[in-house]
Length: 346
Image (tube, rainbow, N blue to C red; front, top):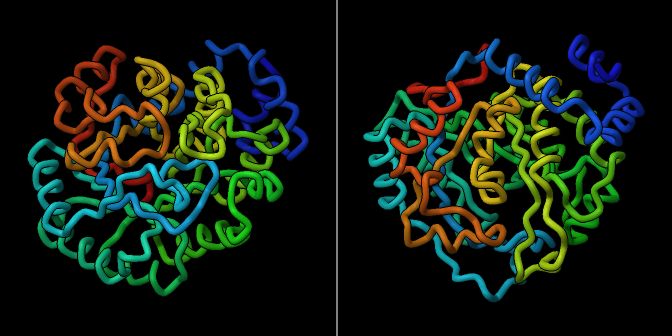
């Protein structure tokens, strides 16, 4: 076995230089061994249970202009929308009947959507379905707003850090956005008491073994409850529309390394992974992932949430096809968990 991989498995910690060296040679690792150890670590903590989260994409309006994102402010080709409260609750009611016990409310940083509105959505969901968890993913805000949502009943917050290297962050984002503020938001969320998710794109423009080493060092230090990583997929109407997508191989390797670094982490096999390969989600689970997030959004809006091109939105990644997802998971020896699926110890 690779000596640094062996050290990671034993100690769950590497230095920055060790991470850089391991990541530089990641494609030469024994992948069968790597994925097998990651899958064994997942099963040690979670058995054969895979957690399903019902994703509701609440708004594709965003004030930011991130260079990789299809719903960026500067993209005039997007048909914008914002869901009404009753529509969101209808999505939750349908999802609850199908067996979902976590709802993920996601959206751009929409200036027309007030923090009080989001708090109202959270409170209504918790009042109607008190046995469910609510995860939010609405970007960067200040502490009082995060506290407002937590007090309303939100349990988790997803905020990908995107890259922990400041120069790389500046390549991916407009000048008004700063890595320091993103990381401060993540730390604030954890201090408040959320189960917190960080993460990054695999194969984003400018990514190197050194920037990836910064990502893994940050995850190692921050110890998030969730890590969302998926391949970078270009969106044709963005400045990165002509860039090369991240690969299945790299995504699976990095998923496995995240699992070995953070054995208890909640680790999604993302829709983006399913977009670049027909069995992407199953392969992600066999590389250590233990969460999938079928889409509960109204079918009419799913194609408008265009973070990247060719996004899956109508097949078995859609919530209404949960039975098909269960069959696919059964084919790899896994089952759909029928509870909230909290981080162990929470």
